[in-house]
Image (cartoon, rainbow, N blue to C red; front, side, top):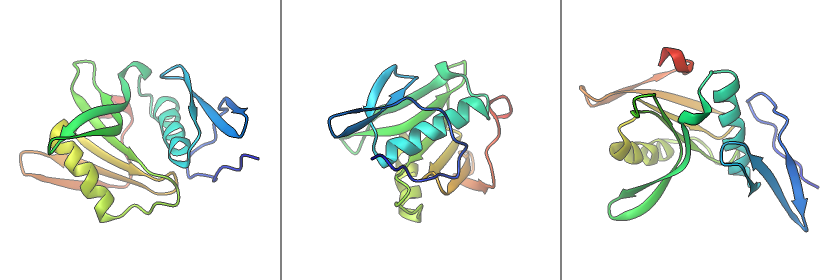
Length: 152
């Protein structure tokens, strides 16, 4: 029986299915069923929160975008763009049991050295960390929340 971890995000009516012993969740952005891992549970909730509560347009959200870092192929969990195609937000999702630590922030910062998004967001579904980048000063500021799409 599928028993997901309750998250610090609103519940959403996801389409959950099962085939044999594998549980799937329907990703409405990619229009396909994905194996439901703890990290995917967090990612799908956070995406729905972006769309429903923060008013992010679905068409400007990219999931699992590729990047090359130190000659290695990596992927970022979620990238959000503006209508001009500029990267606004890099979101790194972890499973609920993974603590949001300095090393997780360093990983996202390395990815953002390529993407140059204005915001870095880390979430394990229980804890959310928001950092606004200041590329002119080479620094960032942690904030208690992130703005909705229209206020980015």
